[in-house]
Amino acid sequence: MKIIMISGDGQGAGKTFLALKMTDNQSQIFSIANLIRAELQKKFPEYDWYNRQPEYKMNTMVRQTRKSILQHLDEHGRGAKQSDAIVWARYMVDVLTYARDHEKHDTVVVDDLRFVDEYEYIKSALKSEHIVHFHMCHEKAKPEPHYENERLRQIADYLVYRQKKPS
Image (cartoon, rainbow, N blue to C red):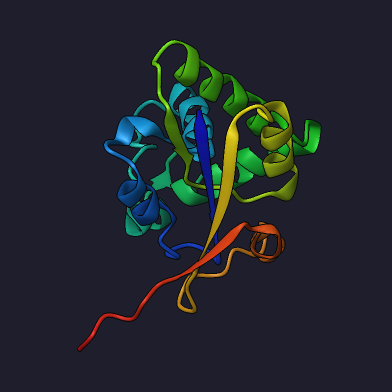
C-alpha cells in the first residue's frame, strides 16, 4: 500500500485540498483529527464535530464547557498526547492497517500530520509500505503554535507550494 502523509504550514495551507487531488474518493483520506472528533462526538453528541469549516469550529461554543469546537479538538488531542505521546498515531496505524487488509485500499492519504513523533511512529510501524511525506507551504496559512509544522517541513520528502491564483 502507498501511504501519503501531508503536513502543512498551518490552518488553511491546503492539506485536505491536496489529499482530494491525490485520491479517487474521500474513502482513501484519513485524518488524525477524525479520531479525536469520534471521541468528542460520543461525549457531546449534539454538536457537528466533523464540520471542517473554520468559522463553525471557532464560533460554535459547547454549552456545557463554554469552549469552542476548535478548543475542544485541540485540547482533547493534545491532552491525550500528554498521557501517551503516540496515542493518535497508534490508532491511525490500526485504521490504515484495516484499510489495507479489509477495504483493500492500495493508496491512502493521512491529511493532517502535525507532530514529528506521530510521523515517525506511523512510518516505523508501517515500514513495509511505500510512504511519502508532502508538506504544504502557504505563506497565508494560519500559524498553529502548538504543532510541529516547521519541523515537519524540514523532514518532508517534498515541499508543495500553493501557486497564487491569477487576478
